[in-house]
Length: 335
View 1: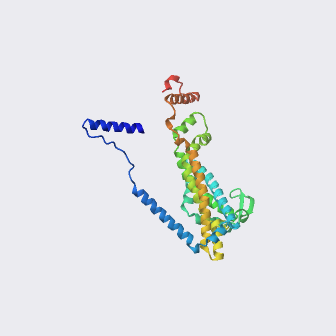
View 2: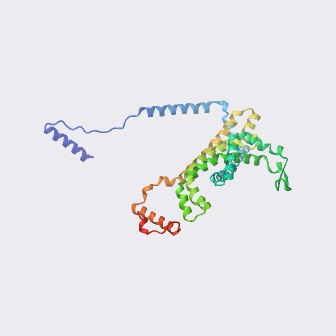
View 3: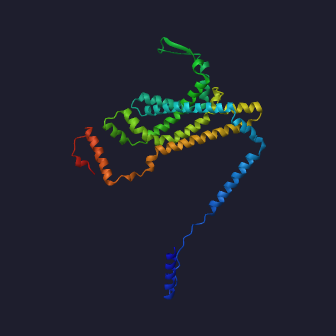
């Protein structure tokens, strides 16, 4: 630092001795951004006002909120809500993958069945579907298994199987599968078809190609919107009162509000629980996105020229070993 100062002083003194104007060195300074500080101050002030309005308003009954936040029935309702969410998403994912594969099938019957499923369950409201699932026992008192238009091998009461919980899970899961199917289909379509063709040339079956080649790469596209759908499903469980299923979080909170004539504190309790669960789901979603997107963060040109040449040579050797192309001299394929 002292050396630089001495040099600048010497240059200035030399220029003055030679009768020239001293050189003024540019000293860059950061450009002031008053708008950033002003907007930050405005946001902080508005946030403080919002928090103050919540805390100081006695009508929120924060003592009641804190007490019932840990109440046993509310905690059980949180458990039922999570169980509904994860079971419905599991059914939806299975249906989505199956339907997406059916839409890519060469069989026109499978394609039309998949399109009909999507058309119906995406075209009708989820609340209406839940009402139907709840009324299934009234429409069909007994369900039977047997030969179509022939003898019945097994008959059982509908209510013994389609309980409110089962009806709620099926209603949510089957509806979710129709929306997730488009997400899975877009993920499958994002994989380069050349990789499927290369895997087929190596003798892999369609199932192996789907499991080992297509799905692992499609997960980068599928995971982010699936995480959003999971969070949306968490809040959609509040509609299962249409079945009716009365053990989930929103229903329990509204029941407490009706009993105590204090609806606002119990809605706040439900809202806080939803925010806590959503925050946890968002955390795991970010971890999954980082896991499946780790190849994007790695440099694609990490391989040297020799490494890329070796990679092309080994790939061509594998294709030649599969005997799907005429034999060629090895050096002919080396780039």
